[in-house]
Image (tube, rainbow, N blue to C red; front, top):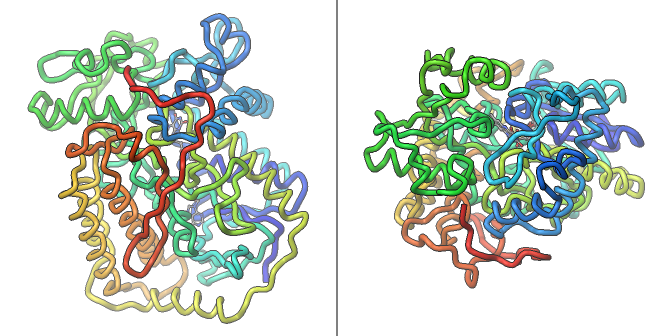
Length: 561
Ligand SMILES: Cc1cc2nc3c(=O)[nH]c(=O)nc-3n(C[C@H](O)[C@H](O)[C@H](O)COP(=O)(O)OP(=O)(O)OC[C@H]3O[C@@H](n4cnc5c(N)ncnc54)[C@H](O)[C@@H]3O)c2cc1C
């Protein structure tokens, strides 16, 4: 049986940053269902936030301001102890990525350049043109190879092995080998990224199906704050492909069909650079009230000029041209909000330890520390992946130094195998693709930007019906080597499991906070709802409990931009 000290599930920024740290001291392996360099982190365009010495003093920025902006952006639901760590450790992590060879864009004086981003009071987002995630991912991969981390690429984890509340390893589908593999470990770290694919319009990669959340949930771990789904304001119309916030950071305008910069009416001081929840709602309102253009509005970059666009937003230029046949040097880009980021996830402490299970850690987008609360600021997610990936790696090492390799009972393995091969042999009449489409329609229509109790109650009911339909799917490919049909079924099962949690948590929360907007409860209600949701799995659907928010310095106040 394969054995490692630490297994990390996920080869994105969080997973690789953790692997880099862990591999300095113990035997570390990364499992990834796609090659690590294909992880969604590589699609991040805009940048990574940090207050850097030298530049910060020049523009009046400070660590306190980054902390405050993040707390305010989170609509006071972020845990302030975790936010302080995120912002305080940011400069050190940026400098170390720089030293590892990440080629950040620079000013003429040669220091790391920083741009404006939504919800941040100062220009503090470091970037590598509009390919920041790609550059960071490449850099970490090189370092991970240098440390000889074992990578199981194109292995799809289907189950955690947990006995007596201790995580002892994982079971994965080795796609090229065509069989299930058991890997034992002293500790397992989940870094499986986000779940945008539960929605029909999304900026996320096809692989972003929230597998880690479902693995943890099925193993008895609660999911935290799942009602908070971020819709990014500027997805390319119909495709959802992201047009980075950096395009507004560089000075782009949002314009309705009358040529009006409508953000004046919604966020007069921050305009296009108000936080994402505010801008997304404004865009959707313009579209819903008939001031859009055929279901979209315009992002206008023309006044920035060709030189700036080609230097700093070349990828955006390329995306708009390739997918919408729009040359943004001469024409505005058609955009609509797109499902982008999961604020909620697997609850962890500030060292990545998962609530309630020993030997299980989580970091990056699948985890909920919670630094983003009800709404994440741009640039803070790559940062979270790096800072908390590193911290989780360190704390997993500390744990494995004292932990033995636990036994894995054959009964547990038999039941995982039985379930997996049972799925492979299903021959019902339902199609995986149809159920997935129906789920995405329900989630977009009923759990989207504007919610109310009627739509949410329907979403809860309909996600349950879809789960029942899943029990009657048919898999036609009977081979086990690279059975992509099987993979899609596994992913759909995951999407179904946590989508019900999103709907149920959103239905229960009778207030509006950050990205969760209830038209029937439009105000934030601190007396009733300044608390985190924890959803536990049960036979009858998610059971909801709540836990307090950690508040250190910043008392909740009204959020204005
Ligand atoms: C288009 C786009 C642009 C963005 N731009 C920015 C930005 O400019 N700034 C910013 O701060 N944030 C940005 N974000 C958000 C940010 O990129 C992500 O939150 C962050 O990169 C997530 O990193 P991660 O390591 O947690 O997950 P990912 O990079 O998504 O990696 C997940 C890994 O888990 C693996 N995996 C998943 N399930 C399984 C399984 N069952 N078995 C085995 N392996 C599995 C995958 O193969 C992958 O390697 C952007 C996001 C998108 C979608």
